[in-house]
Length: 300
Image (cartoon, rainbow, N blue to C red; front, side, top):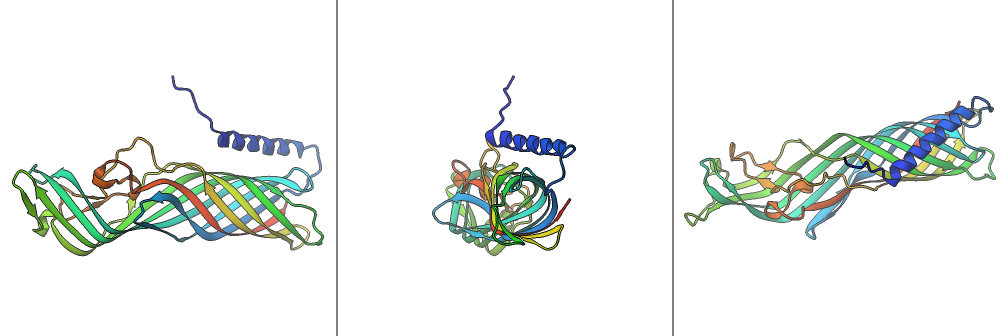
């Protein structure tokens, strides 16, 4: 029987939930403090951070999210909160002067080497997650009557609900070398050999795992009236675990389709490697985000 493994982030998350539950139970015998229910929106550069080959470029893209947050006061300055949010992450990877080849078979079962090259290869990744954060918020004493500074730190567990990618190969060229006949075929097109100005794949599902992140936030809390507050903060989301699934074999980035040679299959960069083996083009993908967070809260 395999032993279950619980990492430190899971333990911290469970500890926070227990503290929140304890606070709820204590509220039955103690006067209510500064418990809040809030709604918020986030916008910024939210995407996938990863390591990549020397000739690759990664571009950050805008992402957005919305959420619901419940906070329970632990004392005058400290509170703990959890909630639920929907967050989008977008990123783009570019390979310049791409070329590759690997061994495969044609429609008649003959072995050959499939060669592919592109002036520019672009891949867009889009991941949408349902996040469950656990945050500790500290508000130091303020010299102002209606404005406070606050800082938050915590962890977040993310469940992917949408994970897709789409690729475009500009200046695509393909050919096939058949060693048994010492023949290099650069045509015809119906066999999947030729030149194309631009070829774009369909949006396809990308296989990723759930995410655990470290959350940091700092900003200002403005009191609107006796029971309403407005938060404006700067937000950072650092992924702690890799999103790719382990023990999965690598594929060729541009794959020859035996059943339909003119319809090339573009595999995700996270699971593709030169000559369909070895280290992938993009490695160790993690969630990463920076931006602003605006939150409207009211006292319960």
